[in-house]
Length: 243
Image 1 (cartoon, rainbow, N blue to C red):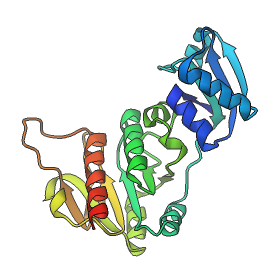
Image 2 (cartoon, one colour):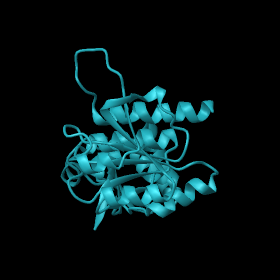
Image 3 (cartoon, rainbow, N blue to C red):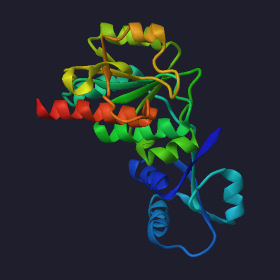
Image 4 (cartoon, rainbow, N blue to C red):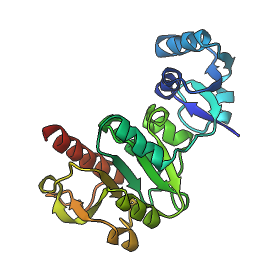
């Protein structure tokens, strides 16, 4: 079953990454700016471009498609061993991000976007009680879905244990713990981020070697999951670059 990548950024990155695209649908009307570039790139690659009424695009994708959709094969999830191999090939300590209970496609997309920019080697999500990589996630990720591997696993606790055996240190981002800038995070890392409301489940938290927290000084008790993940990821980047 095929899916759609919406939006000019998402479709543009799909073209640049070399992802196999079946067809591109463009809303009828004036063609200019980035949309003109998308059409030119598609035709260079031999990808069919079909102009349709905007109402047709609205039926195909219920959201802000910005007048363009790319029809692609369903998202291909990756294998964690491939993520570790990619880190080794770059001569870098593994940097993986695990999301537990993140059900908002906007949060998953935002985490993917930041993780790709921060140089993470992959994201791990559970098969159940979590959003998968769909069109909304791909749009929010602004092209990161074309580059960042995502693995979907049955049991996060078991997967975490297996990664610990492979030498990764497990860091959980939670409300109570060591201030993140006081914790060494320069080695091989699995960063676990909990859901919007529930945080990291008890059994998964027990697998953590370290719990790090983002000190807060205002009145709001917590951060959005994707914002918190982004702050911790960039502290990891800071420490690694400063080493």
